[in-house]
Length: 302
Image (cartoon, rainbow, N blue to C red; front, side):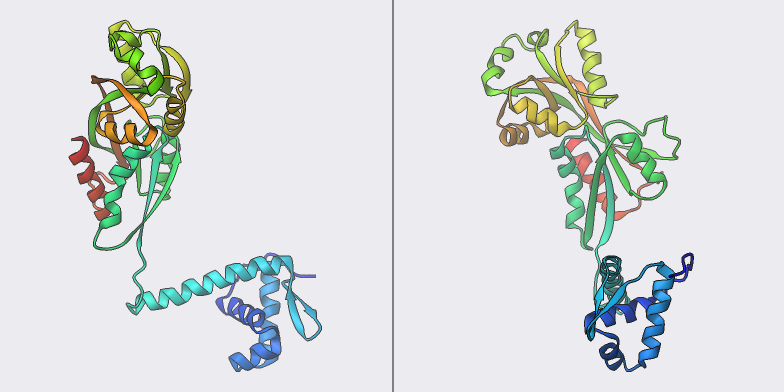
């Protein structure tokens, strides 16, 4: 019976366990490490006591991993590998890329996200870009616990999220209305009055684009027929490409939208503005990658 509740997980325990598995038994491991067999056996017992699980069972002259043992071995292999990498990095032999964790609001078009974030991949010092997608309020909450370095959204930080975050305006542009080729021509005539009663695909929630479009519709007395609302901009693109309805995208990516989704431009609404924000916990941007992202965005959407 193995004891639970022992909090000490020793690096040497993992190393001896890993070596026993690699060498196929305690005897070979002791020869490899030039330590006594009782020492290695003791290390294995302490590791199993700390984890509260049996990790190895004897099979003839060798040892075999239990199911839990296989899991522990995978972790041990990764931990020891990182330890070796750490030593090399300190000695200057490995340049591990800096990590930039970015949360992208689902309503932000994927082409826009790529355009804005792409400069981070071309800095003098390598950067590993880790992107996640979610609703803005969840992403901003992750800023508070430093799971993310930056949130890319089309609205400032939601006031309902009690996080000290700063919204940096990256830029803005008008929007363009697109449709599948088979229906685009009919709505191009008499644009924008043709949008009244037209099948329309809208972002869901309180996205900046949704609010701007609805405000413009109201002022113009236009009532489109809402076919569907979507949290993810990629779904809007997919339904629009299939001909389910008209949809809006930033005018700054007109050419890319037409080429990638094989749709046609119906018309532009310069009075409807879509803005993009970099939300951080810093009042002033300091991270070189974030600064590069901000400068590129202002060039594209400034």
